[in-house]
Length: 386
Image (tube, rainbow, N blue to C red; front, top):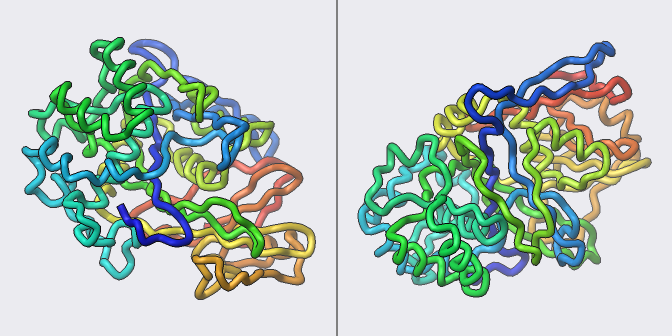
């Protein structure tokens, strides 16, 4: 891990999707609103795992988030080289080399970890972190046999479901000491299924105000598709409950009362491009080595509210202060309605009367997709569209 970071810490999170029905059963049909007042039915055959953080949590209390957490030194331990013995000599342990040029690759992925004494590449360690944290928080263990092949591991793979009592015991041990995750893999003769996790995004916590002491994280987002929902149990520590929601259900819950932070909301809206899990799996696998940008939202203060801008937006600063040390406040003398109606290059998120809205007119990079999200009749409509 990188112990030289001053302003934030590194983390990893997992968008875990799973088939929501058994064979011959009916997928979930969601009733959506439309701009013409006629309801539209959308059928999803998968759901996404959300964990609700404790209200006592020091970071995003009570929020519904994807499983994940801080990178631990154990995630970069050289002991993993022995665990991944069959793959350690392959580029990124068999994950392959991302096509994205190094000068645009997010810092957390291009950092040379050998400078910190680790032989484990960042692409591998962050996936290990996401798998370990998912196990600690939900009890879902994403491992495969140590002698399995990479091609099979990239396909639909179920979670580990053998010897439930032993796994539950290991879960408690790993929660108390992340290094035990390595010992568990050795004893069970398995490896974390890093090949089933595909790069999806990279979010850096924004600077909220010049006096803010809020925790900040540089977080790698991965996605994994399971054929069916595994047994899920909260830990009653950091996580107080869990929900399996379709992407549209989660968005509807967010518009009602559930707090889903902006990065999760954005990626949920991306998932709305896919109603079928197999289609989502093919897309994630197809663009697995294309690359991603690191996005740090920058808050712009309008006359009547705040706008969360992202790279590519016409209000986004050319050289944003990622460290927060300049304590610069970005503002405009215009109102939110004017900013949306007149904008041409939009990549922003707004809260309008308590409802989250996305406005995007830019083209995504690295073969990714923009969010798709049906606005309600009362939503503000920008003049520019994709």
